[in-house]
Amino acid sequence: MIPERKTRTVHVRDLAIGGSAPIAVQSMAATRTIDVDATMEQVRLLEEAGADLIRIATDTPADVEALAIIRSNTNARLSVDLQENYRLAETVAPLVDKIRYNPGHLHHHERSRSIADKVAYLVGIAGQNDCAIRIGVNAGSVAPDYAAKFPATPEGHASAIVASAIDHCELLDNLNFTNYVVSIKDSDPRVVIATNTQFAAARPDVPLHLGVTEAGMPPDGIIKTRIAFEQLLSQGIGDTLRVSLTVPFKDKGLEIHTGRQLIADIEAGRFRSVPKGFFEGLNIIACPSCSRVENEAFIDLAQDIKELTKNAADENITIAVMGCRVNGPGETDDADIGLWCGPKKVNLKRGTETLGAYGYDEILVRVREEFDRQVAGRSA
Ligand code: SF4
Image (cartoon, rainbow, N blue to C red; front, top):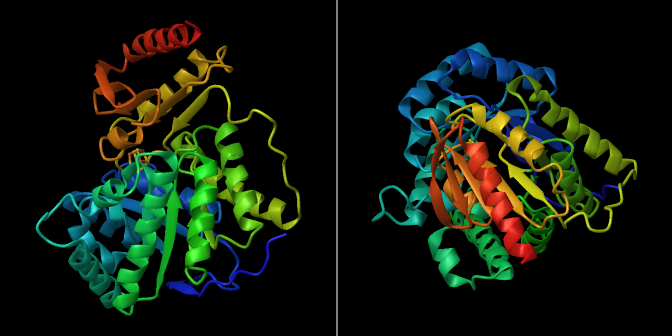
């Protein structure tokens, strides 16, 4: 049930992605990179689960030092996630096999330098170090010039992220760099399906990395991911994938097992029907954690919120729980109730409005109040 894919082949050390290669399954360390022991344990767990590629985030020189130690202790294929601090590329590239940059984060530093120039810098570094690149577009962090160019509607938002991906492909093409893949992620599987289908029609040659970001906790997170992957892989769209789940660090291997199971089911034609009304009612979005997580307690918090709202499944309310200040503020904007977690305080939002910052021991009461307030507002 997975038709032949038409993309070119990208090489991540000895791993082929795209073309006729098997669909690669990857994941990401959920721990803080500077905690070398914990991150090594993530790498070990993911390798044991059969990960083809393991991503680690680096934001600071201390992260890079930790990455160097991790590199010297594993032969796993490593990918690095550059976010705002794209200039770390030159120190991390010698340590990894693939670099991911987010087009929506390149404007933060060196504002006078053009985006094209920054991309040329990244491509130069990747070429010198034999690294592949992922252009990793995320719906929660659309580059401002693309957000401004398209209408502020769901359709406009989708067009902005697809256009951003296509334009970055052109930047790389013009630099004669072809060893790259693209990802376009959102927490809503319907947006993932629509945007990846649009992109694949425009650039059928470019391998796609699939994922539903912040899918949340199992089983809902697995169901959301399955909905997207069934629709895309069955159309021959998708060359590598990641299942993002909010689970305790020790259970991270579940992302790999789930990815392989989803591929096997789709290959065998074992599709699950989506029950009517699946997208209605309570929706909890939660990030899967990564090195940027500022307090591990956010994983328990996500579970507590699920428990707190368990009798409110019919309420059309979206709650987003994010683990850090890098992506948390932007990726909670679309939720009715947003929480992004700092080291000591959790920032509570209503849509784009910040309501306050509360300790981990007081936030649940605040969420309950806000939730009840919104429910009452809707019934009124
Ligand atoms: S929200 Fe922050 S901690 Fe969570 S996965 Fe994204 S970058 Fe990592």
